[in-house]
Amino acid sequence: MSDKKNIILGITGSIAAYKAVDIARRLMEEGAVVRVVMTGAACKFITPLTFESITGKPVLIDLFSDPFSHINLSKEARLLLIAPATANTINKLSCGIADDLFGNLWLTYEGTVIIAPAMNHRMYCHPSVQKSIRELKSSGVNFVGPVSGSLACGEEGEGRMAAVSTIVEAAIAALTPKDLSKQNILVTAGPTIEPIDPVRYISNRSSGKMGFAIAKAAARRGAKVTLISGPSSQMPPANISFVPVESASEMETAVLKYLPKATSVIMAAAVADFAPSTVNKSKFKKTEISAINLKKTPDILKKVGEKKGKRIVIGFAAETGKNIDNAKNKLKSKNLDLIVLNDISQKGAGFDVDTNIVTIIDNKGKITDYPLMKKIEVANIVLDRMMALKR
Ligand code: PMT
Image (cartoon, rainbow, N blue to C red; front, side, top):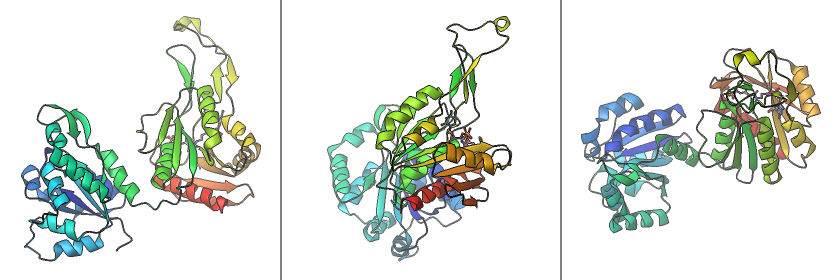
């Protein structure tokens, strides 16, 4: 079996088949090699050409065009993802009916399987479908969804295919080695906002992308993850506990609540350093404000450093310029094991973007520079460095 993320994406005859285009595209963005297999019914909903254009590889449909394609394909693949999976396909798979390429592939494939059902809610509840799902689950097949919602037929109920992002995340997580399965990681992300009045606030810039990437990478690697985040438009990753907060003091309360169970803490949040001394109950008129008195917010990471125990504690330092000394001071004063310095004045680093350029400094003074990379890659490096300290 290949080490690559070789995925067979099986598409069956459901109106949700068009969403498989996005699934294929996103899996490829995650570094997967995607081979598409379609049933004849799937081709009535969407053309194979669409998938050939996206994946750059021929789509397999016909059992007889190459008599051994199902055998060769199943040897190479590390994951069989069937999305969408119809009631007909689920029933056929549970019985092992091999009257087309799809069914033959199923019988030759021995690796991990994920099925994302999509059908009318009454079909989904039908005893034959439920029995097939039970049998497939008991033979080790993983199911993602379906979810409740409005269905293509105009009815409401359970039968809608799970969100594309949920399916893609399940696929990538299934291919990721679980080296963090004994870890319980507390991650902070996003900005905090400190209200002036019900309308206005002081904040720091942060989209949450860096912290969410750390939570996502850790969950994929099998860790229990609690993500505490200030306001962010990012979707919380699958399989984590998500705790939304607003202000620094709310973040502090949440961090201290979840700290006892954490084996490591990684603080990527851009906590506002100052908050208005008082919060006005009603909206100030423009003419009423000439100055705002500020107070310091709690230094959450410093408090975590004081209560550190055997935990690994990692902070981030957002600096304008590669200020190694500033970062080292933060590392020392907050009792950290590692600090991840990002020079936010560099193109492709810091706030909002999907990439970062970091320098990691350890508590012995060792400095390691990393090139521009995606935030998910930075996240995995931070997690690798965390694990190296545990050995
Ligand atoms: O969210 P993105 O758009 O992806 O941007 C990512 C990021 C640039 C916000 C992130 O990579 C980053 O650098 N986060 C830390 C930002 C920051 O507040 O740095 P700082 O140098 O001011 O703080 C140092 C450390 O102390 C940080 O871990 C911070 O979370 C923590 N801190 C700071 C102040 C405070 N009152 N309490 C804290 O716990």
